[in-house]
Image (cartoon, rainbow, N blue to C red):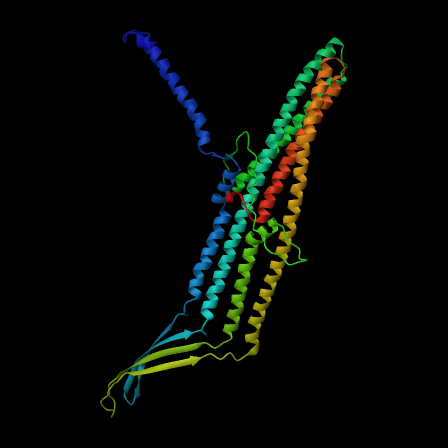
Length: 449
């Protein structure tokens, strides 16, 4: 409006001042809305949550550093021991036939038995591979935990929406019950039942909100991001595609493992880590065997000799000496004990591998059976029970409007539908949790999508 007024007009200045004030207030309000969100870390779906956890979790980064440090140490184990340089100076000269000795310089090098250094290096590299596989195991565990936390948050949100929907129906029933009670068509019992149901739903919604906050806290802890935020409506965790291994020939009468079991036995990082540890123990056994062999010592020395005229042959020619040595492993107990210890370590790891294989078989088979049962439960709920409950509710509503039934029967039909809807959400959440556990048991995660 001020642009239509002359500059000298007294109304132009207040109008322009009001416009500037309104603009500043608008910008300040926008800044207040934007600034709190600048420090937040929003998460869109479960895959995004898993990526965030894998990128930020400090223990996973530390596991990778440990493997790299051991791999760097393996290079030093394959090198020769440091040589020894010895310098002697004689304050009082030692007279010899060639002259007087003033100083001596000697260099020595220890040479282990051939193959010992390489065995030590291979043992360290196998140990580094063991740490690498443990890092992969940790990544799978973090992926599983992130998906489980997301699934708990989704369950809490879905149950909250389901309860709110039931509350909306209760509000309509309460209004109808109030009108009928005031006109004398209904007793007070339906109204009291509706009010109690409404209060019970409020408590349930508070419990669901607490579950949602706990799931968000777990995700924030895993992602090392205290300011992590979740959307209002979370998408569920989608199952991974399940690749199958080609069939292998099985001997007659032998038990043929399932495809999931064979996939787990070939991909689980725990087994790979134990196999790498077994290889490391075998290399340590070889190190113990080679350490019982003698080591060699070679050296050279140079003696600085001064010329002495009063000696017949005192021409001062420097003396050069060569040194060869060998260590003798004399004591039998010192040779046998390291080899026996290394052999027992190998047997221990082999027993751990067998135990892990058995645990993997039983875990995968148990989770597979549980998935089949939960899928059947979900099918019955969605194909049979929920449609029948909706029909029962519609029938009860029609009969109620026609005055052929009471409000309590309509409320029972609505409550039955709500209970079955809650069971549907709970069953879907349990099925998603079992699938996440099965993916972890097989050795897969959301990172493989």
